[in-house]
Image 1 (spheres, helix red, strand yellow):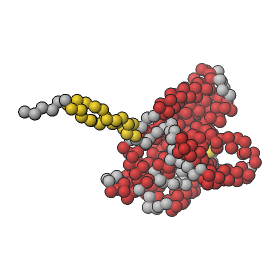
Image 2 (spheres, helix red, strand yellow; image 1 turned 120 degrees about the horizontal axis):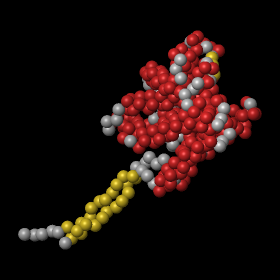
Image 3 (cartoon, helix red, strand yellow; image 1 turned 30 degrees about the vertical axis):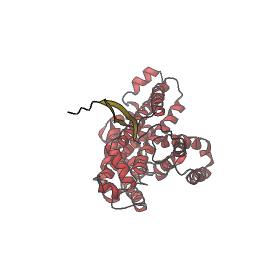
Length: 361
């Protein structure tokens, strides 16, 4: 009887901290769903803003932080999603809620010609190219007279007063119709944010996520081991466009008023999103969550200072990039090893002893 050593290793991504974080996330999500029952309308509107900006940031982070595609033209998909939703309501009489889905599909369709041109560019040229394409989309949309042309338009009162589920919400929570519409938009934003974070986390833990990381870090090496870099980039670009279009449609369903300059705004839908991701930590799921909270606090306390507000945002962004290049969460995670959404695969376990019988004839 001689002892033989056999390996009992397994690959894991989950950690004890991530398990606790998952339980806490479930509790927080349930609390957020129940919040409209006792929260003020202003708080619901603030949370809607936070959730929609978080969703936009997560999709830009997927594109730039994980895919290495730094786009400065995401406002094109926000605007296209919003205008497609408005067109479906105004021209076809569709309810605004299902029209949001059409907004996402319209952004997805727009991403095809965008990608056709943008993927012929690399690095900074790709970033500038996406910005130029977004400006082209804004100028073309401004000629669309059926939805207000350059001056924009509003959703018909008949559509906003009869949005699906609002009457049920008003009765259930004993609120006015306007507050019920805000609650509906908030719940939809919460669902979209959960789907975005959960979907991106699942993607990054899949084989496609490994391929994405390989393409970002070294496209040539990725191709040498059989990864189709172009296909991976197209996939991420289209997913980001779809999610951004859905979010844009939802934002403007809640606003109920649209114009080309607002819907295709570089500052509102791309510059701020980049600030959120960079401040929080690019290439991490936790980073945009931290970044959007910091951004909201800065906007709340500094927006009244006009141009100084933008200058302060810029100085803070520069300071973080110099002192904490990984972002707030990225630097914290690097020093402590804590990850709430771990995607790095770890080999755990060890050798175990077994007994084998060796006989000699």
